[in-house]
Amino acid sequence: MSLINLDQYTVKQNRAVSRVLDTLDRIDQRTSVHYSEKRAHERKDFRGTVWISLPNSDAADEQENTTIKVWSRSISQSGLSFIYPFPIYRNNILVGIPVQDNQIAWFRSEIVRQKEIREEEFWEFGVRFLGKVIA
Image (cartoon, rainbow, N blue to C red; front, top):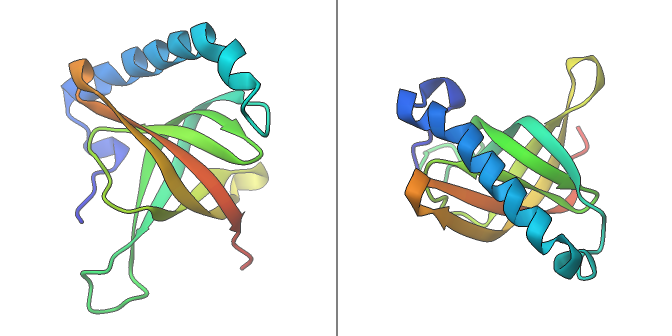
């Protein structure tokens, strides 16, 4: 599966990023009371970039991954939400979150939700953390 990084987005996709994030934030505000009771951990706003790494099963070397940066919009102890301009046809991924001193904390993760934002040609993904990757 070939993926595109943030710096490869088209002008149209770059313009859509903030609109998509703003729209999803407004939806969250309207539905927060209903879903907050169902969530195991409180969500925090987290607008920034995170890394997504997908196992590349098409590669001859099974250790090879495809890693890209994507825009994130919220995070909790158990997962995060990010947007990407295309569907992702994998359930298990790695998520890299920037932490102090330019380090990245990697988490084994599972995509538990994919929602198409048709008018903007983007997808929102909900990811559940399965465990921290220990280097």
